[in-house]
Amino acid sequence: MFTQVATYFSDAARMSPDDADVHIVLGVLYNLSREYDKAIESFQTALKLKPRDYSLWNKLGATQANSVQSADAILAYQQVSVCSSSLLLVFAMSIVTVKLGLLHKNTCCVSKHRNR
Image 1 (cartoon, rainbow, N blue to C red):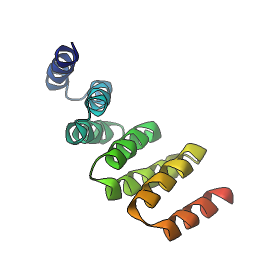
Image 2 (cartoon, rainbow, N blue to C red):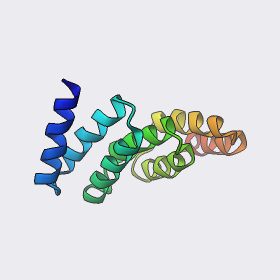
Image 3 (spheres, rainbow, N blue to C red):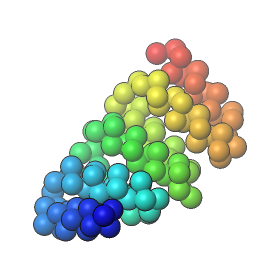
């Protein structure tokens, strides 16, 4: 069933390449199936259409953090910080920076958001 749904949304993305929501759903589906490269590609396509959507930057960052592209997640989360001062962002950045062994940068990030 999952394969059918993913195929349906892949077809929809090809038919409506300017529909960011289709690409977002496809990214979520790929993320759930741990096809992180495909999910990242879908989220990046959606971000070209909705570059100021902080929740979409967060989805991209979370997917990158779960994949082998953890370092790229920091860049995505920095875009979230431009659009939002979410506490969730602080925790997401903390997870990625600890995973990458960048504890000092993590402390700076938490301090930055604590002072907002």
